[in-house]
Image (cartoon, rainbow, N blue to C red; front, side, top):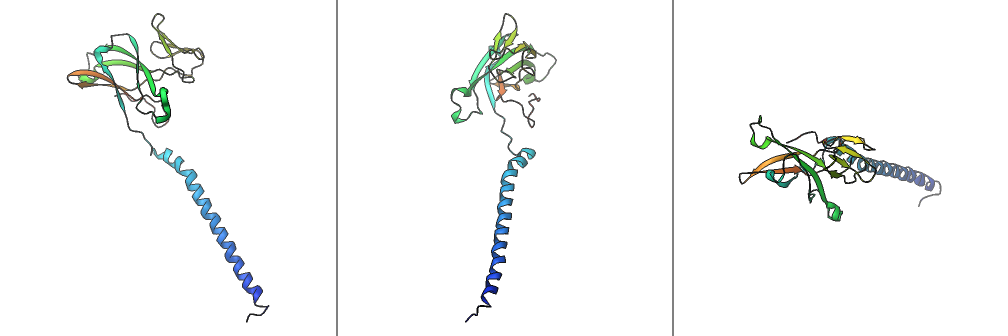
Length: 192
C-alpha cells in the first residue's frame, strides 16, 4: 500500500507530462496553422497556379473590314458556373490590314484587339465611330481609337488582348486569348 508521503510524488511526476503534452500540442497546431497560411503565398511565388491558355475563335479574317472597329461578343471560356449572364463578354477588333513584309502567313495580318472593359473600374466602354473615341458611361473615361487614354479617371489605356491567326480549311481565322486582366505573373505583353 502506498503511504501518504509517496502520493504527492506520484502527482508531481504526472504534472510535467501533462504540461509537456500541451506544449507540444500548441507547437504542432501552430506549425499546421503556419503551413496553411503560408501555402498560398508560396504557391504565388512559385507560380504553381498558372491557368492554361484558351483561344477563342472570332471568325474568318474576311469578316473584319479594314480600319473598322467592331464589337465581337462571345462566351468567356474562363467563366465559372455561377457567372450567369456576365460570362458573355466582348472585345473590340480592328483589322489594320496586311503586313506585306512578313513572310509567315499567320503573322501577316495586323489587328488591334482591345478589351471592352474600362481600365478605371471595369465598366464596358462604347465605340463612337463619328468621333473615333471609346467612352465609358460610368465615370466619363475617354480613349482614343488606338485604345490609349484620352481623358477622365482611367489610369491607363484599354487592355490589349493577345491574338493569333490560324488557317482552318485554307481560310485565315482570327483567334484571341481568353480575355483576362494582367497580373504580376502574366503581364499580357506577349503577342502570338
